[in-house]
Length: 182
Image 1 (tube, rainbow, N blue to C red):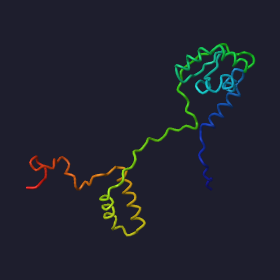
Image 2: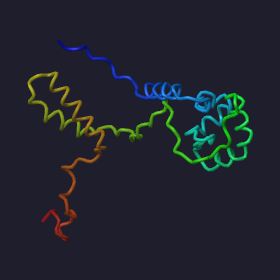
Image 3: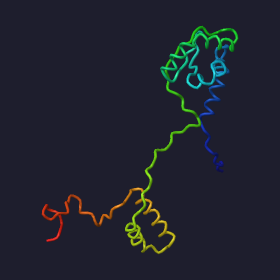
Image 4: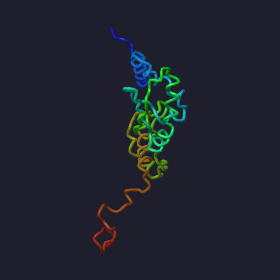
């Protein structure tokens, strides 16, 4: 018996829940840093810096730019006292700063590349598509083929009739080796 298909779910929230559950299972108050970080440093700084690790009372914080690293270094003492106030027993001794890649926000997605505006298909091309598809017996299939072909020509930006163009490599001038009148 087949199981009904379920919809795919975003992986981000599941991973974040797993990380939270692992961190909550760790001992000691220093691991609460991730829980109190935004409240202690404020939303502006929390958007540009995040705790990476705590070892031996040293909090390593990742920042998204050198400018924010410098700002954080100026605020290091204040941030340390705020975090220790939130954590209770003042377990943190110092803050180490490291540059990291910014995390993509879960709501932001890269925008697709912009496509140039389609050019209208010239009349000669429409007539040629109709001549080519006129032999298709089924009218629905014929219309579908015409639409598909016209979309293709539109995407290619067809403007000139290739039947009117000189052959490739030809100058169009009989005196220079191209076709012309005798």
